Image 1: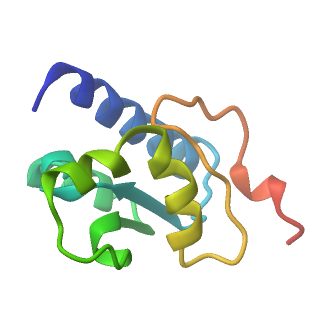
Image 2 (image 1 turned 30 degrees about the horizontal axis):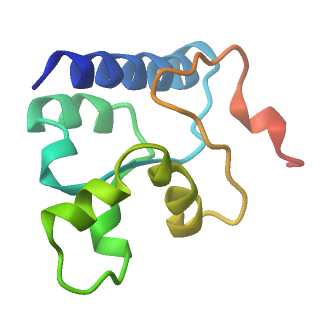
Length: 113
């Protein structure tokens, strides 16, 4: 795993840990990525899954983009992933968080529940 991806994975884990352990919130979480190149190593993915209510989703599985080429995959990476993740989410209401965002309160408070 390259260094920049390691940094993002660390922040993702820390934020989910804070949501689950510090805020005692089990709001469901979806983590989107694009292709096998961005997929988390199994040992890290398992650590995150152990926190509960987390789903990993490859955007390529959700989008009908025809024949998948490396150029098409590269077009989906970066800022384009954010709106596509929102469109492909299984949730009715969402909070979009970058991997390096910091959670300062229970995200459930953003919803009228």
